Amino acid sequence: MLDQVKILIVDDLKENHLVMESVLTDPELNIIKAMSGEEALSLCSEHEFAVIFMDVQMPNMDGFEVAEILRSIEKTKHIPIIFVTASSKEQKSIFKGYEVGAVDYLSKPIDPIVLRSKSKIFKELYLQRKIIEKQVVELEEQLNELLKVQQEKDSLESLSMEDGLAHIYNRRGLDKFINMHWHNCLRYGLPFSIMMLDIDEFKSYNDNYGHLMGDEVIKEVARAIQKSIFRPEDIVGRYGGDEFLILMPNVGTKGAEIVAKRILENVMALNIEHAFDSGRRCVTLSVGIASLTPTREMTSQALIDLADQKMYKAKRRGRNQYCI
Image 1 (cartoon, rainbow, N blue to C red):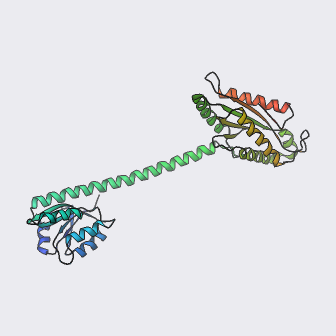
Image 2: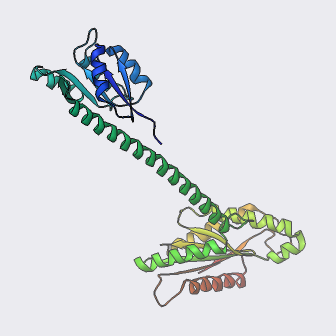
């Protein structure tokens, strides 16, 4: 529940304070009084007011000066100010009051009904504003909580799509992006290339160097493949064992061939010893490339199978090469 709503009365005559207090008997109001403009400014820095009833004519600092200062301060510039003045006040003085930020005028002698009505209106506006501010804070907290949950969800999903050894996409991640890129290329009539890569004579490497060394080879080769991919939309993943898959949307045969050459060069540059291969003496890859523009009669799996066939053809041709 909100505290009492604070209203400030600024007048250099105590009898005027007493008159207004006797009228404003609403128990939800906390009436605070100031005898001068200086005191009013001090109180505004300490309290939050729903409205200020301010006499215009005061010694040292009049109501207009106080209003101008309040409007220049971030904390107080939105406090509604109602000037209280004699009914015979000149029209130009009233205009000046609006210029310095007054929202209304009250004439002396003050009509009790008008005073109560205006205080009630600004009390309700203040309470509504506080409710809205509270709701905004609550909504921001809920939004932050939702964002936190989404970030945790995204993080978990990212982990579930990452190969724990090679730190590239796993089969689940590849499946997600294959479907996405396939449908996009189908929709816009774009070419789609898939590259299947396999480490040459990896079983022989594992048998002779051990599985721990084999795991290191997979990690090194994965990094070399990733290093060879320049476009952010191209996806590299571990398809299984020592097989890797690369998805290249909007890339035709020539573009895929350029990437394949770069991959073979980067893997050779690793110069990982393989004394038990068939003559190259270092770890190499065989690469199969399949490129086409998707149609509704085909599936992405057909393109993967075609790349797989070309990869085995590269092995039959002597390994450490690509086949399109």
